[in-house]
Amino acid sequence: MAREIQSPPLHPINTRPSKASQAIAGPPPKAKIRWDVLTIFAGTSLISLTLVPWWGFAYGYEPLSILLAVIFLLWNGLSITAGYHRLWSHKSYTAKWPVRLLFALGGALSVQNSIKEWCSGHRRHHQFTDDPQRDPYAATRGFWYSHIGWMIRDYRSGKTNYANIKDLERDALVNWQHKHYAILSLSTNIALPLIFGLTWGDPWGALLLAGFLRLVICHHTTFFINSLAHLWGTQPYSDATTARDNPVIAFFTYGEGYHNYHHRFQWDYRNGIKWYHFDPTKWLIKFLHLSGLAGSLKKVEQAKISISLAEMQLKRAKEGVKRFYAFDAFDEFRHMTRTDVLALLEKEYASLIETIADWSRIRQEWVQIRKDALQEGWEKHEIRRKLREIETRLRAHQRDWSTLTAHFA
Image (cartoon, rainbow, N blue to C red; front, side):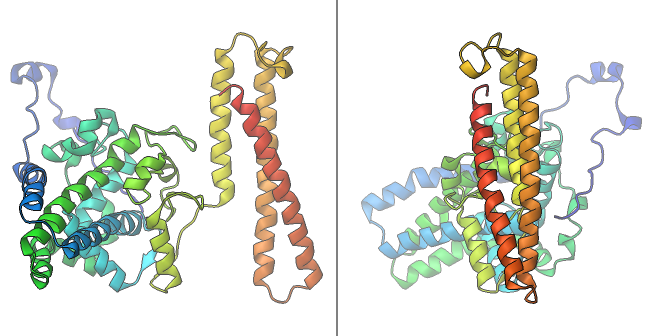
């Protein structure tokens, strides 16, 4: 993951106004409205709510125009999640230039600013998560602010600071997209839909669907990651920030809804780590890797994930124990004091962590021995047997631990 450089303090000590001067000057002025941003949001929304349905009733839309809107929606959505977010912001994998170019153009299509601007703000978001003064879209300032309000006014927390994207400033493609961002956005959002629409005789229909309506949908599904994904869901890996996991949000955000995991392990190319998690961005990156168009996929060790889960289960169980005055509701704890139960939780947690460490060690041996073609067959067989045994024991241990902590969580 790219190294992040601390932003300078908002109010240097030697320039901070005194209380007396503050009283004379009055309250600080409200952040100015960014009329360019407000015009884009209001204009595209108004067109989508009025002209799009009216044109549909009056003239109808060609099927190819509808298909184009879907393709553009996938293009700009995945360009943000797989490109702006996981490739450039977190460097969770590398990609060949055709993929990077496609993502750069799709990012311009999404009208969410250039790669440099977007990634700088996102890295600050991770560096100062929930800090109302330094996180550009801090969820602690409310749903409206984190969803869209932070862009409509010129807040200090949103000021651009390229100190944390030195790596991206050395990227020729990133600099090219930043320099030509305005023309790229206009071309992809207006010219492309019109040109495609002309080929099948529906230029205005294509512009309304693939240009305006698609853009509004793209904006708000992306903004859900900053707002809803910090307000609605579970926190299985960490409660250090407001980030939450929510499969419903993941469905609308190309897999980004597993946000609690992402904030805990932001360098992982995955957000949804289970096979059944809806994370099309992860699937796209994996496909690009298998096709030779992406590499260096970063993936968190399963042992670290399991430990994070166990830590949160222990924390919630201990908090639950402290709320109980008696344990008569549970036969197995009837004759135990609160201190006894807390000691039991600590003991079982330590035992589980030891089992996870054993499993991780044996698994590493197995991975290494598979790479070494000179190892004898019987040695490979022995390591595989040990790995299967420890995996069975670990699964049983995790089930018992989940059952125990569930009593008090």
